[in-house]
Amino acid sequence: MTKPRVYVTRRLPGSALDKLEEACCVDLNGEDTAPSKETLIENIRDKDALLCLLTDTIDAEVLAAAPSLKVISNYAVGVDNIDVNAATERGITVTNTPGVLTETTADLAWALLMAVARRIVEADRFTREGKFVGWSPTLFLGGDVHGKTLGIVGLGKIGQAMARRAKGFNMSIVYSDTMRASDAIEGDLGAQFVDLDTLLMQADFVSLHTPLLPETHHLIGERELRKMRPTAFLINSARGPIVDERALVRALKGKWIQGAAVDVFEGEPCLAPGLAGLTNVVLTPHMASASTETRSRMADMAVDNLLAALRGVKPEHVVNHETRQA
Ligand code: GLV
Ligand code: GLV
Image (cartoon, rainbow, N blue to C red; front, side, top):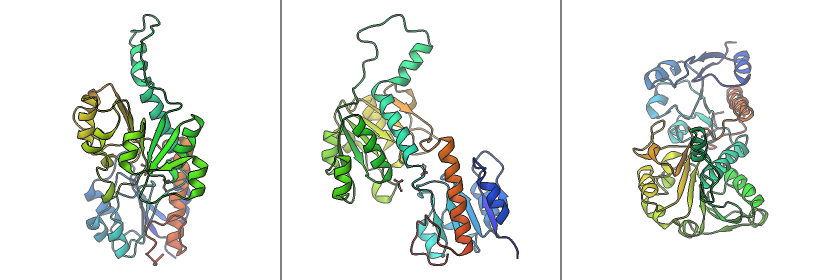
């Protein structure tokens, strides 16, 4: 029996690819950068499966070039890089890596929140530059975190993990979502359901945890930023286009809000003009799930999802449940 053919768009941490190679004929992009669209199309023509990253755009044109493709395993929880509807129409199973990255992502969102509130990055730079000449009552005043109100936009797994962290800081928690959480979840987290405008007006910290969908594109724009308190902070560890990044630059410059911490960008890897020059923003390069442990668990999960689909068993983490082919 010939082994199924798989295209893998990047080397992954851990030993998951060894396992994949035992079962499949693997064609690996050995570069440290994403394959161009042309390269991607060239390489998936004859493949049965694709293991890809969020930097690979898998649109209808790419799918049309791969008539034997049965499964797309995305090495991410978000699948906004894939035209899932087009894949579903072609009977292609799409899988992702939820759950394993929940706590690690919330850890980074929490670190961003703390860093921007207490001006850690600015202060680090100041100290390294030899500018610390003595203790002062007004040196690097920031905002308190404990006892404040956290507004969670999207109370999914990651949003809930954020709420658990906030509980330890004695914060009040409000959240908005398309669906209200169960009484049990609300009770456990002490989280109060409000509409987005109320959340924006009440929260000292607004943290985004929704997927990127047409409905969440620019969910936070000028109108929303103007509703936030002038002492509030915005944290985005979800997806760049959920925030109108140019409006965010205006908000930070105009002091409509006190600060922001951003791990994801609208035009990744580019930043909106002016963003990098501001001191009241902490910037990280889309690294929320980047712990050694989690990135290798994600690789295991992506490989397991892919192999299950090729064997005709339903993978554990299917995004397009309506596809029956697998
Ligand atoms: C990372 O951004 C992911 O979606 O896993
Ligand atoms: C989604 O599955 C999440 O981890 O929030």
